[in-house]
View 1 (cartoon, rainbow, N blue to C red):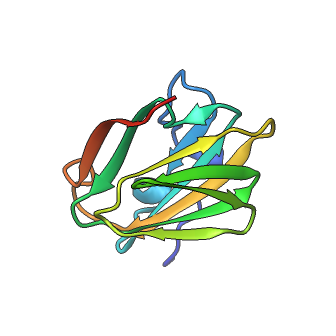
View 2 (cartoon, rainbow, N blue to C red; view 1 turned 180 degrees about the vertical axis):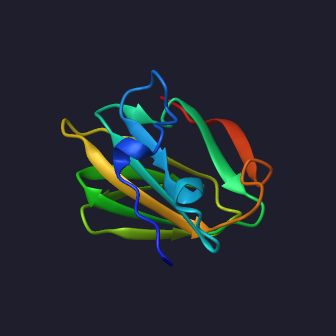
View 3 (cartoon, one colour; view 1 turned 120 degrees about the vertical axis):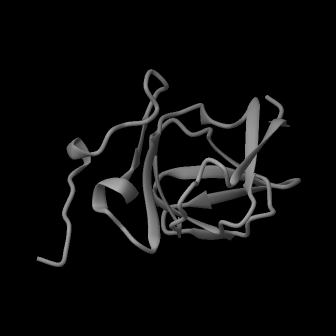
Length: 129
């Protein structure tokens, strides 16, 4: 068999007590080239009033599956609705926020790297509340 199938209930939600869910499928699927993450964001969740992040090497593509989200990319805030894809190069500081009443769903795709934690640089107070 050359493929892997995982349902959401088979992939841990890494958010813990934070509202919504974030499921990083990469390890569970055993991907070799692509990192794949699903995130469900209830109203007033995300990075506003908190930190942003950038990567040393990793490009990311964010795809809004449902709802409407705000993306802060460096100094610009962009509104993105269902069906919108945003490519973010490594050096751009980014954060995502849901200001709408309905939940939003987001898929994040990037190249798979061996140590994703070492590739991230957090930027405190990036998006003041």
